[in-house]
Structures are given as structure tokens and as C-alpha cells.
Image (cartoon, rainbow, N blue to C red):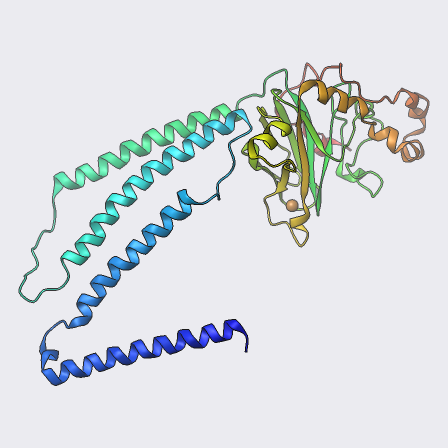
Length: 366
Ligand SMILES: [Cu+2]
């Protein structure tokens, strides 16, 4: 017999015995004549059980909220510190209100359990009391909403001019990431150009895309604002970088953006967590289909000089796929192709005339 079956039978037996005891107790009260009372022993039992359940619930809540490790690690991005503070401030206010109201609720239910000798006091309204419990939550709410609004605006204001940009594209079922290369400009793309050879749907004739590169891992330098240009190829996905408190949907046909500044390198985080195998990761936070779970992409935060070294090692997408590019590009562009370069780390990371609003190039291509 399996262990779970044995446990199941034991639970059923215990329940049956409890029901039996309760029935016997009811019969005994009939014999004694106490059944004539309007509330028997069960009234007291229920009052006590309510307190027991409430205390167990309280204990479980506090244990789970504060006694376990199920929290995000300390934020590795600048804005994450503010969102974390907001979260814990809201949590503190809610927990205080929760504890006070529940202490009253539990103790009153026990104290004012049915008593034959007590008549309920008729107390229909108290304007002063209602005023107080409306005004105080309203003020707290206004403060929280205002503070949240300020934080939201800080996070979604224009990305600073010295930012770098990365394109993140979701597809069933992986992420594709593209860097703008030495010119700081991402080449334009069109969904009509997407093929097994051209997964980004790059418009090959656009020379700003010739130095774009598509690495297997995301690398970003510590302290540098990073703007993600997010799109999806098929269904909804969601860019989720939990350690950086970044989350933004990837929507087909509607480019989105999110910028953040990493303040901790991968090496520093490994040291902080005491885990030499730790890696930041990009996950998909939208249930996008069967292979959703496999949408994991490693993100590495480097010291700026290591980042430069890494960029210098990258090969342009057009270089890696040169055969396809030469075969597919319009003939008049072919003789320009030798200009395809490998990314250089010293060039600007973002084009000077660019804005934060995503260019809807994908939609404008004839
Ligand atoms: Cu997904």
C-alpha cells in the first residue's frame, strides 16, 4: 500500500471518530435535557475554533512573509531601490491595519459569543467613528498614490542621452537580442523580411544594420543606462529581469521600451549571494505557449572595461551571415558590402539624434 493512501485512510478514520464523538455528545445533552438551551456546547467550540484558526492563519502569514527566503534579492538597478521601498512601505501600512482589525475581529467574536443572559446592544450608527475610518485610509491612500505616481514618472521619464540601446525580441520560444554596433543605430526591420535565415527580419539594404550584432548573452556595463527596445514576433511575451525590477510586455506590432541602470556587476552579486554560479537572467513573464519555460537568456553585468573587451570580440550579424546577405541583398548594394565592420567599443553607443519613442519602422516599410 502506498504511503499517501495510508495517510488518506488515517485522516478519514480520525474525521469519522470526531463526528462520532460529536454525535454522542449531542445525544448525551438530549438525555440531560440541556438540548432545550438555545445554544449548546457547539457555540463555545466554534468560538474557540475561530480563535485557533485565526492564530494559525496569523502565524502562517508572518512566517511566510518574514521568516522565509521567498523574496527577491536586493535590487541591482537604481530604480529598483525606489520600487522596493514603495513595496515595503505599502506592506508595512497594510500589515499594521491587518493586525489591528483582525485582533479586534477575533477577540470580539470570542468575547461576544452567544450568551442566553445577554441582550445585544442596538448600535446602528456613529458618525464620528465613520468619519475617522474614512478619512484616515483616504489620506494614507492619497499619500501612497502620489508617491507611486512620482516613482512611476521617474522610471518612465526620457532615458538619459548617454544611454546604450539593445533590442530584445521575443518569439516562440526564445529571445533574440541585437546590439546597434559601432554606429549606435539599430538597423530597420520588417516582419515581411522574417525568414529562417533572417530571424530579426532585417532590411538588408539599411546600412545602419550592417554592424549590428546578435550575441548569445546580454552584456551590459555597470553604471550605464540601458534602454531596451522590445518587440515580439508572434504572440505576447514579457521581458522580465527580476533582479533589476524590470518588466515590460513584448507585444506583436507595438514596440515597447524600458530603461534602467545596473548598479552591481555579476561578480559583485555572486559575492553578495555567496553563490559562484549565480547569473542574472532574462525570463519570459507571459504564458506564451508550450515552450514558455525555456525562454531564459543570461544577462551579464560587466565592469565597463570588460564590457569593451566583450564588444570587441563580437562579430556583426551581417558578417556571420555574409553568404545569405550577399545572396539576398539588392544588387546595387552588393559592392558596398565590404564596408561591413566588426563592432568597435570606442564608438558612441547611441545615435545623437535619436529619441526614446520607438521608431515604428516595422510598420512603415512598403
Ligand atoms: Cu514568452
